[in-house]
Length: 167
Image 1 (cartoon, rainbow, N blue to C red):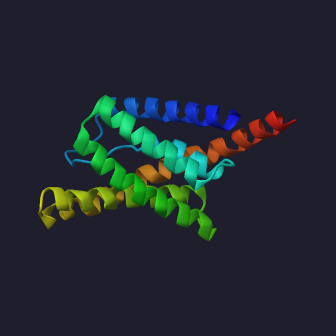
Image 2: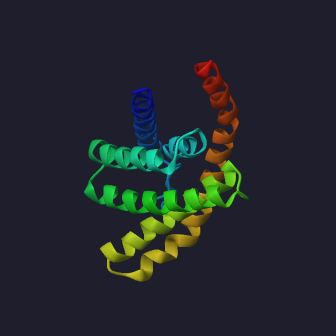
Image 3: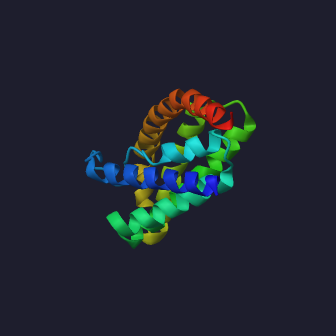
């Protein structure tokens, strides 16, 4: 029961971050560039005594709910593809053990963009959209690193909170 409440709270935080992100004009003329604020919640779930199952659940629910609240069906399709590939890359990166949370977050940011470009190529039926990939990889690297640093700074506080909760 406690875990369900915790996941519900984290889903709510992710939805709030999705809303905040939708208010920030951060595209530089290239479609698909975002800060990825809700991905911080997914990264926290991967590192804070939760597994990839909980991270996937919160991520999918957040994508679908925020998609219906703040955008449209196409956005949900792009975000699900990016989110699935991103989560897979982060889980593998974390399991390999030689990536810090920053590195895992960068993997997530880059692979999210790769997933979105892949879907875009099928939706618009042209490979021309792949010309955006270098810019999207650069932005995924930068935003992934920034989010990873934030999460890495938060983890000790969360672990301290866990210790207090257990005692």
